[in-house]
Amino acid sequence: MSFWKRSTNLKVLSKRISKLPSLNNKAYQIKGSPHCYYISRSSSNFTTASESDNSFLQNQSPSLRIRYTCNKRPGQQRRGFSSSQAMAEPSTSLTDAVVTAMRTLFPEELADSAWDNTGLLLGQAPQSLFSFKAEEENGGTILLTNDLTSAVVDEALEQGARMIVCYHPVIFRPLKSLTTKDPMQTLLLRLAAERISVYCPHTAMDAASGGLNDWLCDILLDGEHSVNRTVVQPISRPLPEGHQGMGYGRAVELARPVTLQTLLKRLSAGIGNQRYMMVAMPPSLNDLTKTQEITKIAVCAGSGSDVLKDTDAQVLVTGEMAHHYALRHTQLGQIVVTVFHSNSERKYLETRLKPMLEVELETTTYGGTRVIVSKADRDPFEVIDVRGL
Image (tube, rainbow, N blue to C red; front, side, top):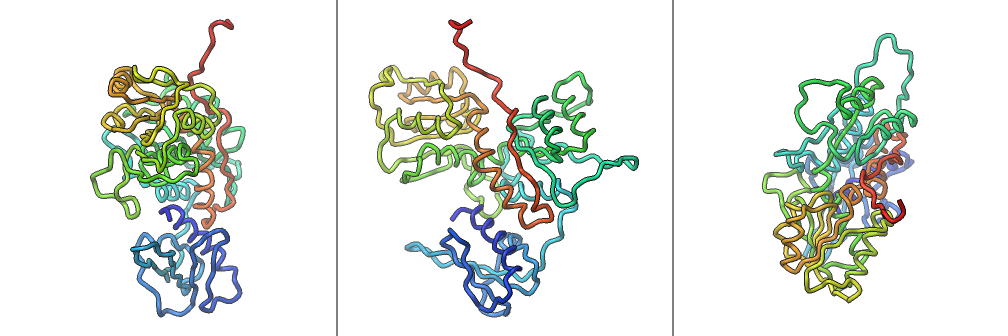
């Protein structure tokens, strides 16, 4: 079971447990989950929990203890933990709650801080003493977007958003001033004036288990089993529990060969039925209509030139790749598939991030928050047939 699914089930469970009239050493199972939770108000016969596992159990009863058990696979030991700690201090604002949730799902330690800028990049401005604008105590709206543009800010204001989760960083390099002469700075000033905060996960979301690159692998597998899934560039520094061995890019060895045509159709459907893709073919494979059996694929959301440069996969899937990198791969006999940068990322917000964030917020004060995905967000590039001009 993935790290996210485990924490999610426990958070939902802890909320539902408080509603049960009697809890006396009974087994409780979440519908649709193969994992069983044994519940007791006694203090005996339970294993010791790690700090991170305890943090997931934000239940309302300090005396309640939960032991989590996972179905054993051959060769694996039974795992368990318990919690008797009181519920953690509630977040003081929606921004705090969302930041905590995002850091749980995609720890900032996973980001490539050598060049990236992730985290809470625009905090919520303090409310004016003369402001008469009322705020919802237990909800509001969060807008998810891949990029921050004027159209997205307009949408956020129309929807009454109190916070924006923007995948790409809205502040990338140090600022010496904030003026309306720069488009992005203008947007930040508009948001600050409306007390809307912005959180940007970027490469932390790329690297995390269950993040963008795992999602791309799932699209290409389309339910089929893989022999092996590995991280292309593992992070060597110490990482939070549950994220050890994570990093950038993924490589997948297929249990049985599939054709290139099948992979392209799966990719198109998974990222939103995109009609056009750019494919760089080796000289020996210059005809897409011929069947090419693929057994190993590598993926990197966004720009995969550096991450995928040393992989031996037959097919490389990414948002964009520099000309000379793509040329080199074709000379090595590899196929490069690109779909435009943000098109390799955007659909993740709707299919994965939205439900994940909703579950993380469910057991907080802000469980009633509305999470929406931007309709105004789009890739800046379009394919145009000049014959129609």
